[in-house]
Image 1 (cartoon, one colour):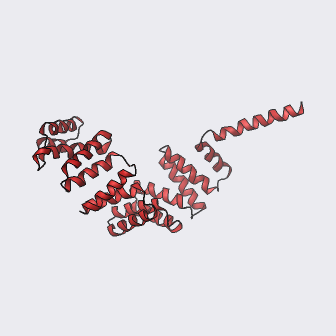
Image 2 (cartoon, rainbow, N blue to C red):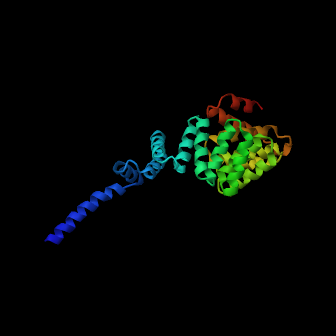
Image 3 (cartoon, rainbow, N blue to C red):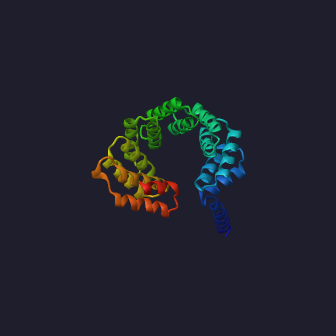
Length: 256
């Protein structure tokens, strides 16, 4: 009877404890509640809140983690991402500087910092940052994409295409990459391949696909090589943009 009683009591305790493990968010909240100074738990809790789109709460957890442990590179990196998205680019760069002081070989932080540096006009440092990131991790698709876009904006089309193509090879099959690749190939006068990438961006959908729609329509309407023109399809694409409420850009494309 005593043994059965002990087993029943252990069962109750196990059932109560099991509720803590229902998901990661509950687990980390419980850990922080029991040990408010557990900086790693706070960083992990912030990451879970990020996954749920609860960014303000996540930011609070990263700041709390850094008050306890200023050398938490992960918290610096994640906090920097939120600051950058909130338009606080200079503060974000400071956080990434701290993350890289602690973990110089953090390729993602190097690449993120490079993008932020470009936003504040520090182009040379940005390209150096992407170069460092890709030396650490040659397969970091986000660095290839951002570097490719920046190179294209600087007029360096051939290396831009190489980086964008590498991003696609690494599985970054999203409309933004195909759209940018289409733009770069168009400037290289590789019209048939540009059309292929515009069509792929359009097929994948999302906000970049609307820009790809107009870029494709414009190319089909105005291509210097007549064999790649298709006026009827260009009109159809532009009209679809007007129906989507895209305003003057759609009208300008339709006029062409």
